[in-house]
Image (cartoon, rainbow, N blue to C red; front, side, top):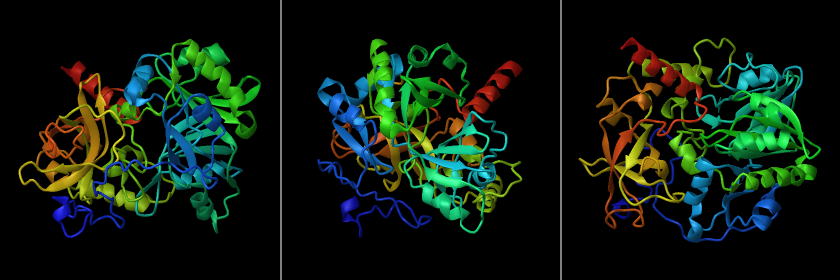
Length: 458
């Protein structure tokens, strides 16, 4: 057991390839209270989320308070929010997705230098999901990249400081650009009826926006940028409010009203749905010591990008090792289906994964939740690469996520979810995504195309 070991951070889980190990001590939720102070910023939507719509809890994301619960537990909590997201339409306060702007004659050159994918093919009013890596190939951020103009890119960032890093990269390189955080705050409109809401708010032309496409518009007289993107796996859009410190609420009110008119509500970001779609959350599923090859992002390392970019040498070396059958990391992420009572809320720990044969704790879950459609608990987590290698001849690249691996584990759930208090539950490897997205990612599209081609050949 963990408490009998020489130190509390579960030494049986081999984190020797990390400089800063994950804290795997099972502390649970101590029931602490969030301190609201001026050191952490309030978003332009803060009053709407917390005072008007009654958000009852929050986290801190990019140094802003972020609502993470709108429906009270006694009224169904997060799973009631899931129903609204998957059946109707929802509005999310995601002003924490800060917009880091790179603008100037060399905007494309600098952006291409810091992201792994080639952005030179992006036209103005295009978007793209990208990753930025350090020189060791660790993922620093995985933003949606927007190109509102030929000489301008916005990094809609996940939870990690990026502006200072890009500014630091440019020291001594002298790309002719300005790099700053701009006064833009996004909201997300997600769910099957999201397009109906957007048509109601900005008109029929919004239906012509392609997936990851952009459109300039106005809401209630305020300039906005609209994209067909989101963090849910459902159909959805994001509205980026310009000069948000002045105008955020003027945009929020008519959009929120339309969501209500269409039977929806404000909810917290749909982590239960993004897990089913295999969408990862930076800091939770990956961080600066995680290679894209560990977490289903190997397709972000191109074979044909001639331009040098940060991390290119390390990533190409990792790719070559994997193709030669020499996987260079201790752990790899997989999907899992788990027994136990339905997991209906955020996990307060990285729950431990054990080898059922030895009983040793060998890995950890990063993102677990219950999925109503599959009627089981699902999650993503890290397990020893050697356990996967023993069960498949497929190289440990992204194709592993398409395999029905014959792998069994035990997961140490808290007593509220365990079948027997103090006892782990059965778990098995599962394909990612667990549930297809309305707008599949590039890797999902490739997977679907391969499946269709195989079916046509038969």
